[in-house]
Image (tube, rainbow, N blue to C red; front, side):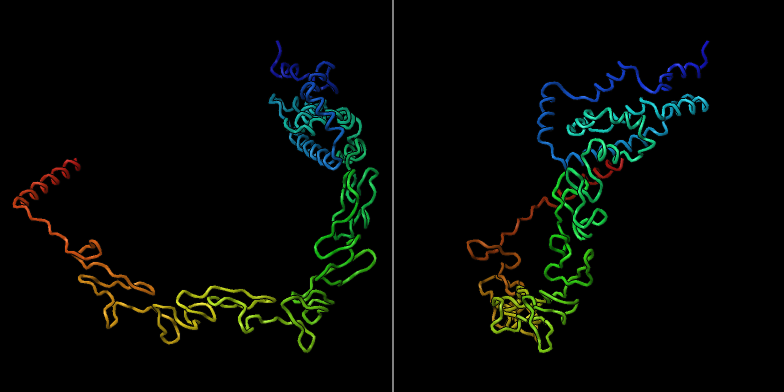
Length: 388
């Protein structure tokens, strides 16, 4: 009779082998492949039009997923309950082809054609690295993507031959930009400079920046004062040319132009001017103002109709309190509003054809009290019912 552990050993016996039987390997490989003639035709198109930068990105993603799969399968537990047995079998599983295939099968999403195509095309390289190269070449990205299938370059290099970027591989573009094709077999190696830098080597300072430090391999550019177009330092006194909205004073310093002091004002009649560094803004006056010099009712040049000046501030006129009545029709009353007023019919009257007429009074019923008593009794009964 077999023990539970012997039965588990028989079930997991294949883990001790370094490779799968040929028919099992074919089955696993088949699962890694996708589609029939239509997909194979797509593969041809992909191969002929492939973007070398995209190939490197795909390879890097595969390597990243391989590392995740390696970690995911690192402590796989078979649930046998026998620690000694698990240690023995896990040590064999750790380097087995079963583990490799489990990792490889999780490298790509089923919808990623480029990824699945690359894995299928180079399946044998994963086996070679797993069984023969992993110890000597632990960096899979370097061994697989750069040295073996040659779709990537080391950082700081570009193109089919992995030439060094401008400025050298250690500091592409002298640390002040991005090298086109960096790390891939594509690109032209030209620099796209960071803000503040320009030129083929990203060593020159662009407009509104000045050079604080520079030699043949290093450049540090810093931003000029906001008042400068060109400068030799960081302050307004270091400007070589003033920006629009600024002007040079007698001491050669760029100072702000106050456009709001111009006559006439650059703003419209119902707007006031607010000066800013190098510019200005036009803002709408308060509704209580007829022309203004600033924000709020205290900066009005004159008060709008319906408002009056009280100690320098425009306030509402209460037309309803004026000596001469403004609502003159019979049975009307005045209602004050902000900047104006309205007339309405007095209480007990309603407007009909533009005239306030008295509302008819409802006639009192002689049986009213009795009816009210009945309603009260009914309500009482309902309340009592609700309480139940």
